[in-house]
Length: 279
Image 1 (cartoon, helix red, strand yellow):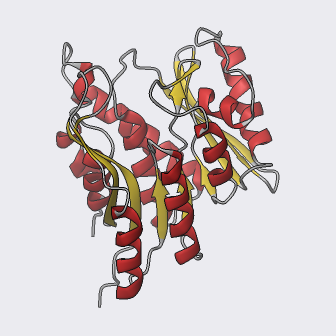
Image 2: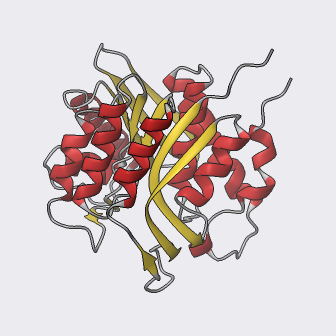
């Protein structure tokens, strides 16, 4: 008799066009044999990176009502995974989910900036709201800019040399364990490698390196996070899950033709079968 699939509550934005947010997270988790339950923080005609001002549909009451409905149904979540939040009130929504399902693994991707600056359109209070949310998580996935914002520091210049970037990531990962028990600083360009620096409050630390592919596409952070979550729920240790996630992002980049519009995200469709469980 087969066991029921693990179930993840995914609290992210849902762009209709452009491979990012829930549009990549749901199929990736499904390919990994994990049931994804989507709670959109906003429904957008496109993601917000370079495709003009998207049409937006947002209902502040939907998220709390959806969580209450799932609770009444007795739905059990193995993981709560949150990403882009456009308002500080949405951080409170994720905290509410953590209170409803305290046994679920809580993974927070504190999406708020990159390349040394905070994303435009986010409120000034967002770093504080995400800092409070990360303090309640089991694992956080900031990039180097977000790590600095969580630590209350100025982000490093995006053109730091390889050795400096690697050292900054490793140091930030360790210091962030004062906030969250497990941290993973992601997507750090370090010479010919892209690295992720992980740390555990109990003292463990690790670095995952994959070959640097000089192509920048929207949505790769969401792909990385979704594979990481799926692999963790399959029983992988964090280092192995991070290695698998980074390798799959590389697979998606290699599956995307040269000259493809980087705003539209990687062509992950042909790579998805590689994630499917094998008997």
